Image (cartoon, rainbow, N blue to C red; front, side, top):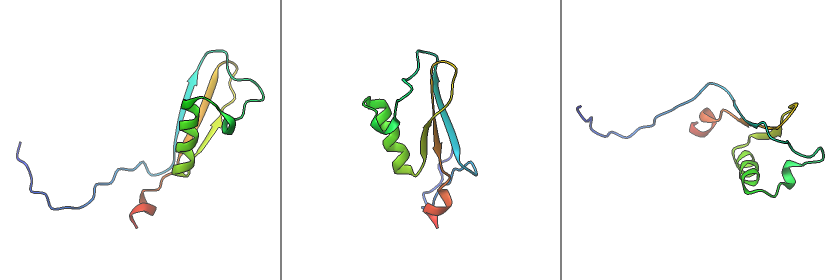
Length: 82
């Protein structure tokens, strides 16, 4: 394969809108009074911090059993490059 000379520039990857990532399990679920912003586990603290840093949202989803979290990642490609 021929290697092209490096000339600088930017590569863009986008989906054309916000992306929602749902993380779910089928275990016992969370207590009814659970608050994401008061989470003590490292994993939930990392997700809360990530959501805040990227301007996204993290929320609990209604589920008959288990736990589901929805992380919404905003589309910011155009804002960062312009």
